[in-house]
Length: 160
Image 1: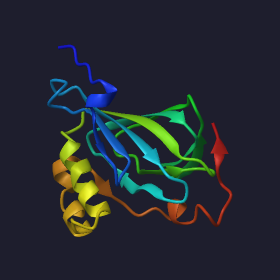
Image 2: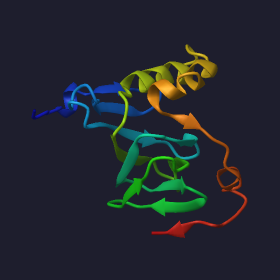
Image 3: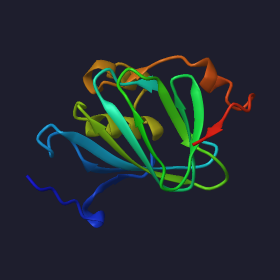
Image 4: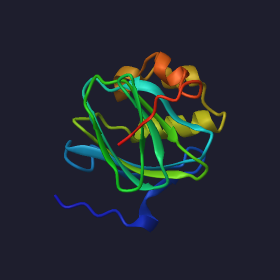
């Protein structure tokens, strides 16, 4: 089945900067995809992992600081990153300008409900504990990462 999502038809969640493109239910279970804009100085996603899904990052604008495993890397425009299942990762804008990133998750569970739930949390309408309680439902499992916590204290970034 061919799927076309026109830019003007995609649902945009303004508080979180997420534009929903295609979910598992739209792609016969093959993938889910969204575009996100991350503002400088604001964490994009805390450390987490997906037990079933692989996540693909493609930077459209700006630069993105990414934790993958215990490594911190900075992605620039045109860079592509594949994060396999069970790999802790986190991300945020790097530098002084917003970062715009296309994400694709394969072997994922439907995720648009998760992004809408996050939108409510960003707006203060949903408790963050409710978001955390959905880890199995959306295959988004938050983890601790000393590398991510210390990212501003250490200069361990590697440019790919």
